[in-house]
Length: 112
Length: 118
Image 1 (spheres, rainbow over the protein chains, first blue to last red):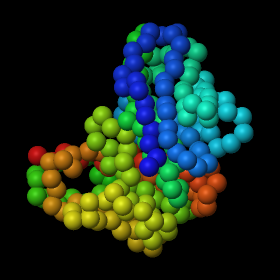
Image 2 (cartoon, rainbow over the protein chains, first blue to last red; image 1 turned 90 degrees about the horizontal axis):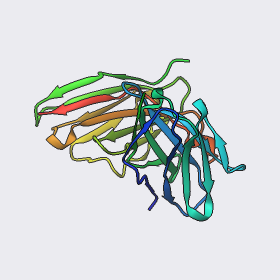
Image 3 (tube, each protein chain N blue to C red; image 1 turned 45 degrees about the horizontal axis):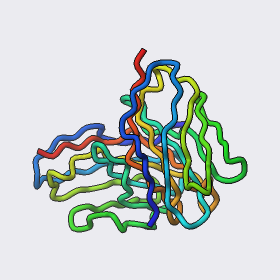
Image 4 (tube, helix red, strand yellow; image 1 turned 30 degrees about the vertical axis):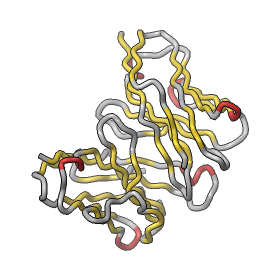
């Protein structure tokens, strides 16, 4: 069965620090990968997505993620975080007909 | 473009009571999803509709949960009777595209309904 692992449950960073959140998936077919973000008090929204082509994808607010097929990974990165990046981040992989499986999420706290 | 609407935003009930949640997807979106998100976990799919037909309800506890999508637009999710372990945020999402392309998996989420069962 498809699954997603996010190993970092809580991450605390100072502003301007670099960020990398891990995401590993298991899925045997054609992979579509997503990172969603949930800011405090807001709904889940799409941060970036990988469907095919260039394995380095760029999303909103300076985030990027790299799809490494050999490692079954889709890690999220940002070179310099801001206080406003404080949120919960979810990795997701396609599974079945238009269906997503989500990881358990990583709570990021950025201190000013 | 209006987003996915959900109501109520918060609900507190006692165990064994019943509760219903409502969702209005983005106009024109054929696929609608209901997720359960327990504190500290990622969203878990409960049921998926394509227009007004059920595509996947394999993780829906059918002894107490039911859902319908009348006329392929709005949807309601009901719990009867509720248990303590049903305390969670119930998320509705919709997707604009049918088929198997990557874009078909892109989902738009509503604000959720936070249910507390006491």
